[in-house]
Length: 435
Image (cartoon, rainbow, N blue to C red; front, side, top):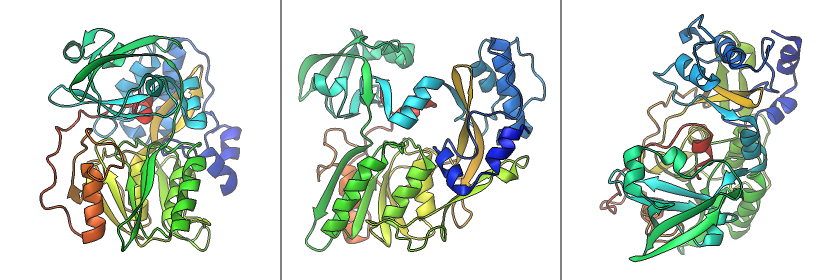
């Protein structure tokens, strides 16, 4: 191991936490490597990926001990060949600048909306980021997309070209969407630009005369998120919120420290570093990287004994970690559908102009529970209905969650669920959750 890595891993916990940015990013990662990166030819990048996985990959013992570095056209192809496909559908390689902008600045180049392809091949807008070209163009949740730049949705699905239909990563790239809204057809035009993500999609306080129920739709655990949800919890605290519905239906994950902070706002902790939020365990080559995050005191902590969480197949990574991390301490009830099943994460390795995110660790709660590769099941079933705005009392997932909070039972006749969506893409696209 290089001296720089040894120094990093002897760092005090305070410094360590600053380096731990994701459920993807946890221990001792400053772009270092346990070996010298020799260069940036394709073969040399392939070698970097291979040697890293032999050392720090969580399933390193499943990695081929030797490969021909000239046999793969890219480091991404190398990674796909080497990963342990039985459990690992998460490892990926990202352009370094894109990854850094998303995690550190909460920005990406795009149009600023999320879409959902149903199993009946209809396509719908799920949400729109506030500061985005899509908002400026007038796109709304619940709009049905009929064509993209003149290509009918049916042909896009037949060609499986969703990965390319929105064009190259070029600022100013135009997009024309033909949509249907309330039976009327219209075409909306916009241009690709830097989108600033608002990770709080919606918040409200529901007063039913008995309880004051906080409702928070939270999307992405980013370094920028703290400034968004801190005032929300200050408002909840001032209003005397005594129940919470946390809506993570679209949340693909993010930062471990941000997750720990959100969990600490939900559950009070009078003494710092006394109660484990999550423990990260690395492979048996590097037990020195194992690390625990603890709940921390928060001035506006609600100190709840229970929380109701809305989940879907897109609820992933740090979102699942938060559910698992709260479970030993609170009565956690899940509403919706089974989560994505990602109890693992990655340390980022910067090399050349890329960032390698290969699974490095597994996540466990204070009861040493983890391994939810099949996802966290929903206690009460409910489906997302895009005909309703987020926060609308009649929106089925919120309605089911509120019914549980108020009656301690599932809706006996929940609204019919829409067809299940196809599983979200893996990688940075899945983390961003929008185009």
